[in-house]
Length: 611
Figure 1 (tube, rainbow, N blue to C red):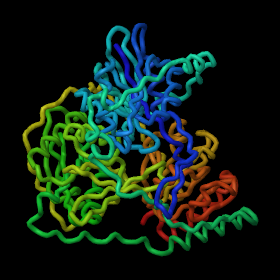
Figure 2: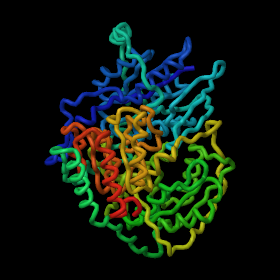
Figure 3: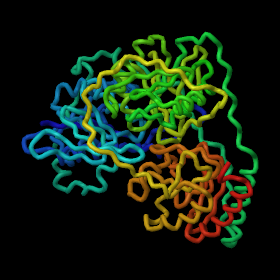
């Protein structure tokens, strides 16, 4: 059995600057390194390898990437192949997956490992796309992977956002690994690093892969970037750093009260529909998850498609059992115009089967304009495989949508660590997109009746990993980030998980939910369901209180739609104070108790906690 690991060399996104005049990225002097998720995948492959087996690392990038790729030899890789060619510049994820798949066919790849996402684009698409092109099952966001002693069978624990699923999977297959699969691993020894410097990174171009220039790069990519802009929310920070602690807290609370006094902007009503509805403007939204239950986050997608893309109209799609009347009514009142049911013969709908079902639906409706899924592990798996099956452009992790004059969707997504927003279109129809859960807010029209559903032929189940058991990690103590009007965000400055109990009085008084930065989640202080930021949830609350959060861009991208940000940090130079509306300089343990009482009064007076 041989392992192949797909690796990307990425820039230090926090050092990329933006030229507002030329509207371009300034990358001069920016260091490059191995994507951390992919580095973990290499180490896992080496741990799973047995005597006589090989670990081959494949990467696509410029010739200079060989310097960083040589580090994988120090991890224990046997062979490194860099796919490099000037024609590959500008390739999107579909072309990248196709190039990597061509290379995989020439090397041993019983099990293909890849990082769940890359820190520069954060799409999570390449693994599922490669799996579909190879015609093998895929599992994503795997945080534990073990191998049976006497068979080429693996047990994998995959993250679900609210918990985990445990699967059995046999090779050939593709597995993407989460950051949590390895907490800490020893750095390579001096001898291992010396060995790595003596090894050769092999190279291959598109000719060796049997590809032409028309099939790769910008020309061959089904998606293209229209523009990249800096769209940081316009906030005017007021930082209270002088005077006694009590006066700082009073001043900050009064400033927050002033900002919250004005009513939140009300969403515009849905534009009226013009009948008959044009079939080429229909957008299919997968509203069901692997158990067939309607995902509440999909309701915001339906609503905002109606509002932000008036030339398009959404239909809800369920794959699995017939949805109950309550779910059909909820979906209709959130903006869906039509409903489709693709029944299956299994209670758990694997992503490969769901992609097959959507493919079948598209074939029955060849004029459909788009397909939208949620950008969680399941949605990324389904969307990536669907894109690869049909050669379609896929925009990952979108947070908004507009329409061009021809009625085609333009998807907006964070780029380069969340500091910028890219507008992306597809050259193919239907265009595909995954939308970050919580990025689009649902609105309800209670006057609408339940949705009629068209049932299509049963979808045969494809070969899928075997689900063994599931578990939930959501903790009721921390509240629901999706519905809370006040949220408290914990950063590493909190000190440790033992201090979480000190936040409970504030959570109770504010009727708040607790979220955490990625580092807090990765350290195991809070479950993954509470992560807020570039790789976590998006929150649209009235007020967010940030405790011990440094203020990196990837922390705050998930809070862009929150009305007021109040930060507490002992360092007056902390970056968070440049991005929050209100700041209190001081140690959180001294600030939080009196701030709890002050903001509890604010919540009662202004109905922040219950509006």
